[in-house]
Length: 231
Image (cartoon, rainbow, N blue to C red):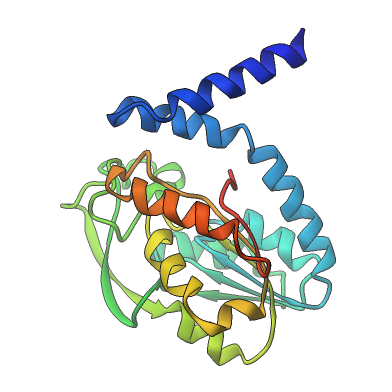
């Protein structure tokens, strides 16, 4: 009975995600979450297989995933643009010699960009730091609460490594769409083993169609293995 209920729920969410507007986006988020456990398992397997390799954590926050990567990787690059969060990240990972914290936003070009925080950031930065984004259209940020942060052309960064990359985890609060669009058209893509992406179309409805296009395109690519259902 439990299996039947699970299958019926999956079918329901798969159908309802196509409803228009916010209703469809809410069901879309629930549908994607059905696969989050599978994505986490796939990532854990990829991390174990990345022994001695390079892993990249885009949107590292306070370092949970970076630490997991560091247990197996030769080198981990942890990107975190918010200065408050980056300070916590450095403190949390200070015991790991193979992790380099990069205090910058991963983007499609180099320079400076505004990072938008949520309205309640100062009251609860531990929780609210999860929402910070360089995408002004994101629903759970306040564009009046912004700071300037450096941004890095991520494909150029990968080129500069001049070696294969085992894993990229990408949780960058809406900016993943532009970064992935550029990356999928770049020759450096084929030096990557796995990419795990969390999409944010429920928070940035303007990105829904582009996110879906990336999801469909990623399924046609043999290398790297791309999972856009992470989290």
